[in-house]
Image (cartoon, rainbow, N blue to C red; front, side, top):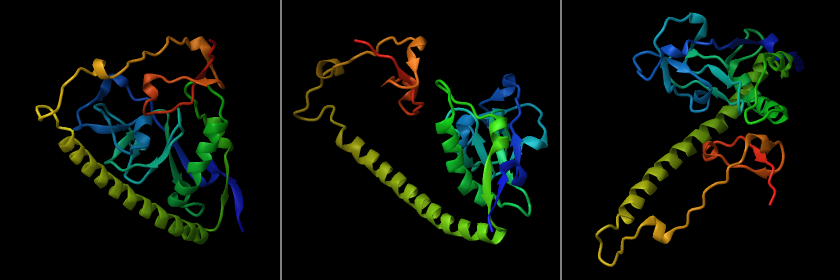
Amino acid sequence: MVEWKKLVAVSDVIYGYPFESSLFSEDSKYMPLIRIRDVKPAKASTYYSGEFSETYRIKKGDILVGMDGEFNLGKWDDRDGLLNQRVLKLKGKEGYSIDSFLFHYMGPVFKKIERETAGGSVKHLSAKVINSILIPIPSLSEQQRIVGILDTFTASIDNLKEQIAQRRKQYEYYRDQLLDLEGKPGVEMKTLGEVGEFIRGAGILKSDFVDEGFPCIHYGQIHTKYGISAKYEE
């Protein structure tokens, strides 16, 4: 039988701490600091040089969720780090849930919440919403069975990602070799302005932003999509 229970009843939810920004560092000799932008890559990009409580220590394999923007869920894959504010950790409670089951189940749940959350350029996940989440909890043996099946697929995906990474390296190598044309016979060098056309973006005001409308592309959205739209009148 599958029971529906609140997430906070079957999982420990630990919220990150507002570490002092003046003690942030780029020196990797210090403790990695896990910020929202680090959840998806599962690697640290900032370090903390101050004192800290063991309550906020994160270990490899811990489940993390970003509470702003895209509500990404991921497993930490770096050395021990510190849980910064606006990032939370999920840990299955003994006898109720196992971490791997929560990892597979909660990803789509947080993405659904993200889609349904009203907001402007950046959405925010609140503790109130976390406290209200209901999830199905099968027996521990059934959770293990489900995880075993899904882990088989994720292992295949990881293998494909490694193959893609190798092919990308091959592509970049041959691209650089084939396009190294400077000084080659029959090759004429021209400025980019002579052979290309440049169109600068229009100045769109923040007051023009709306939830629906013509998509508005900011420089920060070249690699990250927030779904901002703006009014557009000819």
